[in-house]
Image (cartoon, rainbow, N blue to C red; front, side):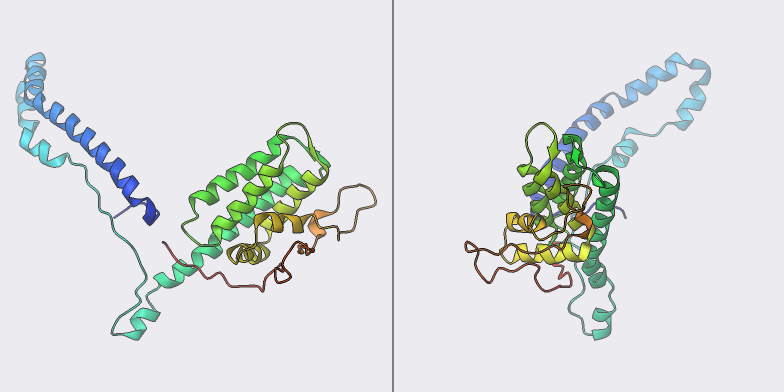
Length: 261
């Protein structure tokens, strides 16, 4: 059996589309079967020298009708959480796979960010708006996978918040470039990224996280006015406008995946 995993809250929309496709398929099937036998007779008449062979090879319209169908099965996959055998629950395997979904996804984010850093941002004092394209692609991917793990949506929010800060046209440099470089470096570090997203889940805003990326506590490279972003510490900005109990990064968590919602 093969299939596709979909968010549970999107099931109604997807099934509605499937029903539309099925209805269209059934109409086309009826149209085809209505002329099936006559089409065979026309084909035989056109190739009389092969008539016997063709008649011995064809199948009835009832057979064709039974073989042409459009259906699906919708079901929910969930870990085994209750069973008379405790070992069956502990060794079911699916729970571990669900828990590891988040780690796998964040590992893929880190790899993508490493590629983005090397190809787009490393050593740059300015970039064009083309430099935003891989971040937009990564944002779209994370948005589509936000149902997999609760920390994914906050990552997408951080990226979108950074993109919204960028100028609409012209060269991207200075503080704007520093923000993007800091963002990519954060995405490269899966452990730090989980810490920051846990902060967002606890109520911290994406702007606070982004503010920490350009906090004035980094040393400048003597050869350029752009800080060495890879050596930056991801630290919080705490001022009079912020509540004193908002501190980044939060204590390092293990990813508490909620599984496939």
